[in-house]
Picture 1 (tube, rainbow, N blue to C red):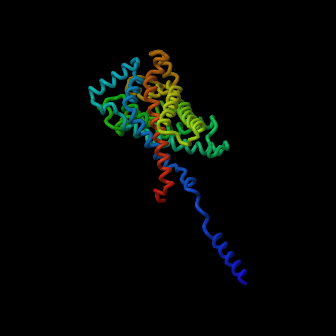
Picture 2 (cartoon, rainbow, N blue to C red):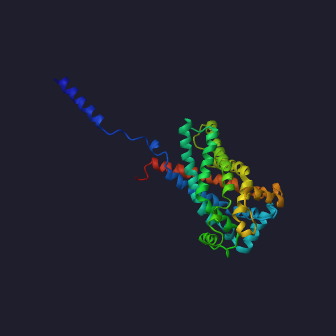
Picture 3 (cartoon, rainbow, N blue to C red):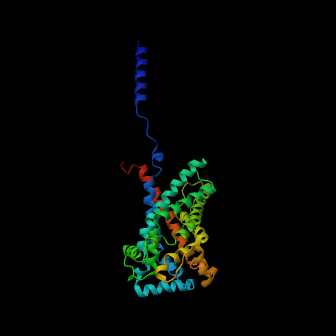
Length: 326
């Protein structure tokens, strides 16, 4: 009798256990990051990076759209003269348009890169692992192309503000209004094709290099996460290689974007390249300001990637600690 009661008790206990709701997934799995996290971290990273190098970026654009010969001495002389004439904040003229553009651009780029990595990982059978070289490059290229397509008019506005006086364009909306009234809506997409052609190798090589260096670092050190200074170094290398590969197309797009205010007339990519090469020389024209890019580009990419990774990891830890209520 006692044995039967014991068996009935065990049966009831088992039934109770089976009736309990299934345990939730481990926090690490539940909190692997969301698209919203990537958007927020990408926007923040882009804004910080562009603000840091804004004076160098503005100086580079001014040389790109003019026929003046570029040199480091002339670049820093321009920065000094601008500071003396118009004050310190003038070195950041157009940065509001830059940040206004780069925050959605970086947000879309980083978020879409994470999504493309996951999709390609599933397709190639590398889900949860580092992608092979070609899909790694493809994820970066697709992310850059997606971001450019969705934010290009803001890049046009930023370029116009960087090369004009405050009297011509007082703010971002003023640029849009004047372009609509005087040049037409199509002007907002002038230089779009060289931008797309340039961002495919640039974004692909940049993300590929950064992800590859992180993968090699993990394999060598057995640490899953690099230190901040290591991330900066990886991002700097990625930016140096990526921008050098696509720089001539960057010069072409800047000439086409600012044609309405500089007096030049450029219609096609090849026509613009031929005109620049004929007037200023192949190397001096199409690679004008590249040395400035070697200074600002690695800094910008390094700061951007590092800021994104650190912010993303911080949000992940907060999710894992249940600091956010759902």
